[in-house]
Amino acid sequence: MKVLYFHQHFVTPKGAGAIRSYAMARKLIERGHSVTMVCGSAQGSTTGLNGEFINGQRRGLVDGIDVIELNLEYSNQDGFAKRIKVFLGFALRSVKIAFTEKYDLVFATTTPLTAGIPGILARWLRGKPFVFEVRDLWPELPKAMGVIKNPLILGAMGVLEWASYRSAHRLIGLSPGIVKGIQKRGVSAERIAMIPNGCDLDIFATQAEPWRPEGIADTDLMAIFAGTHGMANGLDAVLDAAAELKRRGRNDIKLLLIGNGKLKPRLQKRVAHEGLDNMVFHDPVNKTRLAGLMQSTDIGMQILANVPAFYYGTSPNKFFDYIAAGLPVLNNYPGWLAGMIASEDCGYAVPPADSVAFADALEQAASQRDQLKVQGANSRRLAEREFDRAILSDRWVDWVEQASGQFTRKLDS
Image 1 (spheres, one colour):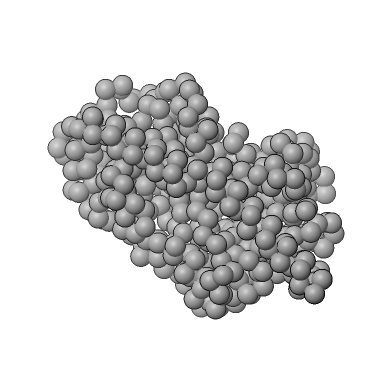
Image 2 (cartoon, one colour):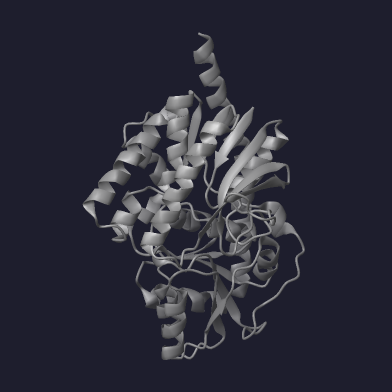
């Protein structure tokens, strides 16, 4: 089977970012299929291609994956209008590819929601089986965050969401809330599989060189957040906790934000203005370098803005990286991850917008280093038992193969 795979933000392990699509494409190839990956360009990530763009694209094999990279650069730091322009540009150029490439099945993954457009048209105009993967619920999340308020845009996104869900032969949701959100749009449960983000156990089990950024001593408790510094992440909560710790004189607890994003300059300005010398910023790093950093880390911070739609409607990559690395996790919002942290005793779940509770948890972690090791071991066991990427990617390929087989049987009957 030849799969035409659309993911605008595709990245390999050599770049900084989520590698779910890379892992799934590699598993398809391992199972005897071929994959053409259509993606855009992104700051801080790498598609594995480095040749010249010709007529707006470049193409080549990356670890057995036929990658088509469109010269549409995206950054979380871009303004709303520019991001919409890039999203629509990718969708329109993807439609052309969907009508010219030879393939047996089309697969598309969000975000953005516009990724579903080539799949919709391939299903109805080319008669191809279509599988749609939903990583975030749009327009529910941007509406809940207040990012998009225009009723016309929200209405158009609602139509596109409905069309994507109803056009797909099968769907994949990455969290319990996402699966329920798809069902609310009239999709039967038997057409949806929940396959969450996974843990790259092999990457984080390697003996990468341990390291800490400048300004963080070996004796300091180091808590890290590794991810995008955007509106959804609510990283002012970390700075609020840093301010509380500074008031308590706990200079032995350092909070590291590693990554980029639209709000990073503002966060850095606030840190400088308030003299939060217990805060450290660092540029993104690739997975191997991240594995080394996590070997020196005491606790991972799973932070999101206090938006109820996030509680069950997200499947954050960073959480799965933390537990794969055997780190306890400090989570600052309720939901399915907070429940898991509590039931598995693999960290701390604190209320949202509560800097005192956040600082209390970090002080407790600093005073109970032996307990941190126990919680870290619990995290790793959870990762191995429930979220091994190798097992989840096999389940993912099974679901995609079944979609193709079901479609073929209907044609033959």
